[in-house]
Image (tube, rainbow, N blue to C red; front, side):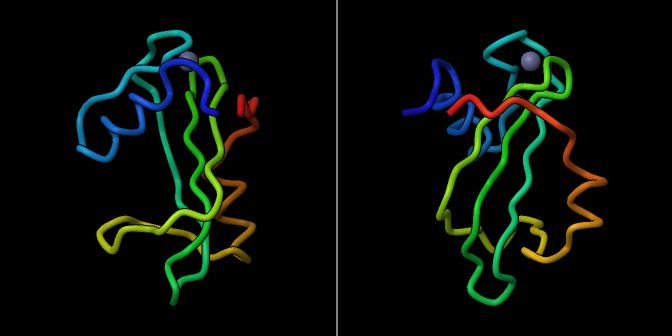
Amino acid sequence: MLPRGWKKLLLNLQNKEQVLCPNCCSSKVEYIYVGDLKKRVGFQLVWCNSCKQGIRLSRVLIPNDEDMLSFDDEDEFSKRVPEFKVLN
Ligand SMILES: [Zn+2]
């Protein structure tokens, strides 16, 4: 189960709409896809850079038009993704 507000946020992200953090209402929400570059299957992280809370979605299909990182690209991962509290 996703915490309150995050399901709607995901829908808005999919529709490329502006999103606000369900926790602190900041617009500094970011996401990343990480997975197998060929199969385009992996996980998605969505987090707020303001309050450092977010969610993790496992076993997602990564859309072809979305940027993604490889599972083993740890350097880039640590550059792009801050420490945040996973709510789900
Ligand atoms: Zn926030």
